[in-house]
Image 1: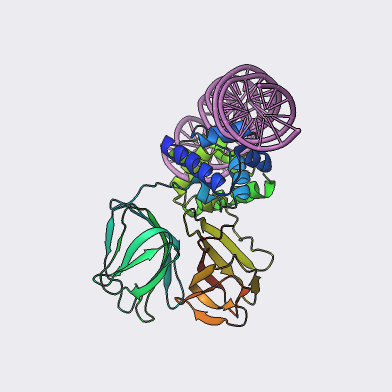
Image 2: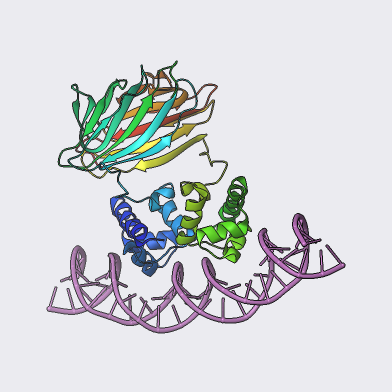
Length: 175
Length: 175
DNA sequence: ATAGAACGTTCGTTAAAAGGAACAACCGAG
DNA sequence: CTCGGTTGTTCCTTTTAACGAACGTTCTAT
């Protein structure tokens, strides 16, 4: 295992803990593990057992894989990380993505199939997005739906942006 | 850690290995772990290290959480499964969830903090959702935004429903 | 039948993860 | 200013996961 993954696990662990207002001692006690153990993990050293990870994930109320999934991830070459949440199988087909964009990056997306629409909800940060030439500025909490069968883009300013994105393919068009 | 999780991990591990035509020895060698180690894991004993799980997940080409996640997903007692995708840290705070509802179930949600809004996008199936008394029928691909500071509900008909859900807390109100 | 190679198991050894106590630093209450 | 409580860290010890070799099996090929 590369040290990178362990380092990000530590960071992620700590930020989740702090976001929920736990102290290290509290979380360790609640999870039933030694706080020395947790301390070491947050520092990025160590190689936790499934048991340990499991107990922490339960307390932090995160779906497990979330704990080990890197935060600052192998970002795509263009500073954008995309994870497929759900691949649609019914009609209309809907694909759902989780997306995170680094500051000062622009991602230009190719048109999807005719009739396709995208709707996105910004979770954190600020983002300019929409069809090319008709973009909107979004703040955390804002939603936007637009036609995705022509070129569209996502652009960040000074801040990171995290968003949920779903692509609805038109009934007749399957990809 | 309960033995159940380890048992299912073992079963899952083995079925994935066989499905891809690996022998135990081959997989162990490819992953760079001792085959005695893998053998023990498939038997449901042991408590693998993150390193070990990681190496196996890479070789089996599964997104990690898949290895430990039970096969039959533990639905909440009310037939609704919810996963936290992202916990907001800025202002306004935005929490994002992935949610899956079994057929013929109704989930009544308590009001969030004053000013909170929810926006959701249906990924698959059909769903009736919204504030109590003002619900809308949604099909896959539809989006809906509504005030979440009063009781609201999600109700399925004959089909499963999968959706993305984000809760935007009002600026002043932190939970 | 018999040597060979693969399979998956079990064993003792070793490396390391988890536990537990002691620690300095910090903070709030009396 | 103390004192008690908490924070997170750093040791040392104990437990145990991972390793590597040896094992009994099975199957194929000679």
